[in-house]
Amino acid sequence: MLKIGNLQLATNLLLAPIAGYCDLSFRLIARSFGGVGLACTDLLCPEGILRENYRSMILAMTCPEDTPLCMQLYGANVDRLCEAARWAEDRGAHVIDINMGCPVDKVTKKDGGSKLLCDPDNTLRMVEKIIKSIRRVPLTAKLRLGWDDSCIVAPQLAARLEEVGIAMVTIHGRTTAMRFSGHARLDGIAEVVAAVKKIPVIGNGDIKSPQDAKRMIDYTKCAGVMIGSGALNKPWVFRDTHQFLKNGTIPPEPTIVEKCQMLRQHFANVLRFRDERIAVLEFRKRVSWYAKSMYPCRMLKERFRMLESAAEFENTLNEFLDWRLKYDEDVANGKVKAIAEAVSEETVTV
Image (cartoon, rainbow, N blue to C red; front, side, top):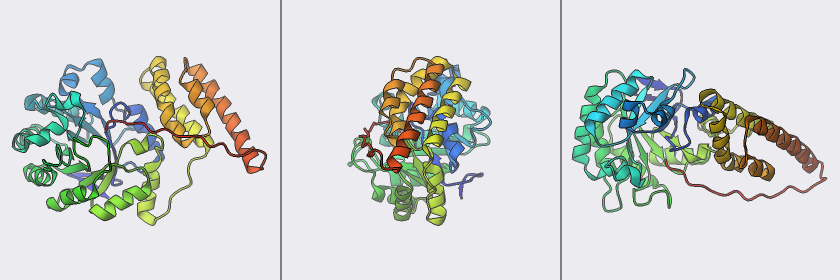
């Protein structure tokens, strides 16, 4: 379906490096539904992984089931990036990506992320050195369109990145100035696709459904799509999108029983790789995302936000499922009217 250097992927659908959300526990959940061609770690700081500090090791954590895997690096110190790339290569990365698209101040103020778009010549010199430093795995880059509308550099930069050896470019269809507002610009993505000769270009931004993915691919001619926040409440979006792109059909949505089992497995993953305290804190945060595909679930949201233990997690989930199955039965039999529950939106860094 999609080839990055010598790496053949099973699908052309990629899980984005979602800051704060795409840890190993969640990557395994997305992979469990199928359809994920490549999953990416959170942004990795070269200094952190080279010193092997605790937080960086958590972000870079992987396991045999977590494959194929892309490790994404950010920063502007070329020597440390080269060392970090070799570190990632030696610790299981199948692809190494350089972040040239993060608009967050704490990254750009250190000349990393989308700040690299402001000095293309220096960025290209940096990339050349990183490519020479690694031995086996392909190097890719994730870009935005430019810093702002006066500095749209992605098409020209993508073409030059291809010339120096970048194996794939992912383009988020916004500028840095836009951050996460407005809509991803398909015309901008299409210009990047047209600018390169052979390497695949992956489109990114506003993919919430299989139809969104197909629309982006059809309009821009990109080789595939990267999905970020659209996967946080529906990790099965990769499965659905893969099937929709293949034959135009979408599988039935998981049942409420299957969704509760997904939560149970995710919680178990965090227990496996971290500990109970982290699992509890993680699900206080995650529940607002998962709830978007599980409503009515007010009881679940309210109790998970005050979660204190693994035992309480299991009891709450079981009580909720018992209530939901009875509620769904009563709605089907006309005994009660369906409850309309508002779903709030949240912003994540991708």
